[in-house]
Length: 480
Ligand SMILES: NC(=O)C1=CN([C@@H]2O[C@H](COP(=O)(O)OP(=O)(O)OC[C@H]3O[C@@H](n4cnc5c(N)ncnc54)[C@H](O)[C@@H]3O)[C@@H](O)[C@H]2O)C=CC1
Ligand SMILES: O=C(O)[C@H]1O[C@H](OP(=O)(O)OP(=O)(O)OC[C@H]2O[C@@H](n3ccc(=O)[nH]c3=O)[C@H](O)[C@@H]2O)[C@H](O)[C@@H](O)[C@@H]1O
View: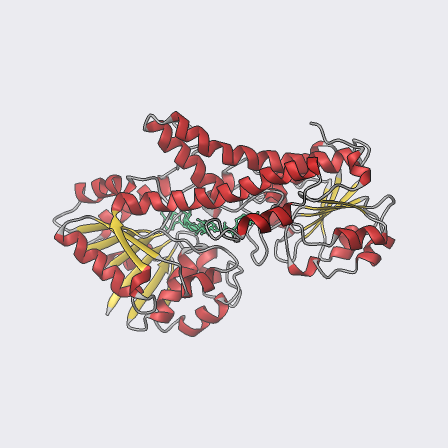
């Protein structure tokens, strides 16, 4: 029986390995992590991450050919194929701080593999890493090899949170990069055989190592660039009276452009887009390509602009101050169907409103109060460290309260900011919300999920990203 061990039981390691175990009953899969609480949660009825369909997959194979353990060294030693799916956060200190990927966790995993291995291994980069990381990993492994043969493969993951199980069941493509040597090709084939259990052959792409590593960074940069493009156009729509949804629809009808990923928003969030683009920028700079670096940097600048533009709209339309005013925030996760808050635009929006002394009442169906308080207190990039390295009990921010109901959050509020596109926000009783709010009552829709006309009929003053402006807002320009 082939044995797979995955180091890192996070958003990628957990679901990916659960699906491999489900689709490959002839393979034993063990997911290991240094975080004891995380592994305990994977072994319990309350999994550590919320992902539609995941519970079902885990229940079907846990204890059969899927195991979760903290005994990292034992399972690494026994495995034939080792996936490494640990954090690769942005460096916060030293060379490349604020841009370069911090490979501390990757390096320590590689050193541990070298220490405990007694047989040949295929080591698979699942984490998103800078191009050429495989070379560094190879050096670490072969320097301590004791005659053991290691083959390094790059097999980046393209799943999106909220649809991870769907994406894993039916991936657009699986990408495997390896060395172009007989041993390298054999290793690529071994990994191909795993995916071939359920992925059609023509969707399994094989490339050289560097193409696979770079394709992951490029794919995320292209996706984020689409959002920044439509968000840039949304600002122009507001200035001209065009409607961004109509523009995006018309643009996306061109089959060369396509309709997906053109929803204007308060900004993209999530653990990877910003981090991976910063990493790409750094690699370009290191390779003497400042023009290319600046091109990609602009995608992040527009994203930051979009978030601060939103805050400015809120403050400007409420007579240029929100001091002491209750603002309801609906949605804190970076997108719907996940409890993940990493780099969520809600953090920057809330911090912006707090900077103007607002009182914020937050409701999100999946995010805990503890998480929200930690996010608002944490320094940038600290969120992407393993749990045990994050600040444990930050001082709670007094102006922020978290409630478990949208109606409670909006009661007595001056304004409502919709920051995540949870389906339940589309069907709220907005008349009831209006009746219980201060007047004039404002809705700032950062996800374009409510019908502005219907809300205006109720009496709200409405701001929707990239939509023709309410007369009220036209008279209140949002200048920083
Ligand atoms: N979250 C996502 O949707 C996607 C993430 N990625 C990439 O996958 C990688 C992992 O991301 P996530 O799963 O989201 O991170 P995560 O933070 O959810 O999980 C990483 C896990 O690795 C563990 N870990 C760190 N060092 C370790 C070590 N030396 N030994 C054992 N365990 C260790 C941590 O305790 C943590 O549980 C990152 O490189 C990310 O860029 C790629 C595609 C999608
Ligand atoms: O490397 C990663 O981590 C993953 O990053 C993204 O996945 P994810 O961040 O989970 O979610 P997305 O659906 O891409 O959304 C990212 C952000 O963009 C926003 N978004 C998305 C689409 C859109 O049209 N407009 C928009 O503002 C979302 O609300 C969210 O805040 C990619 O879609 C995955 O392919 C990739 O594997």
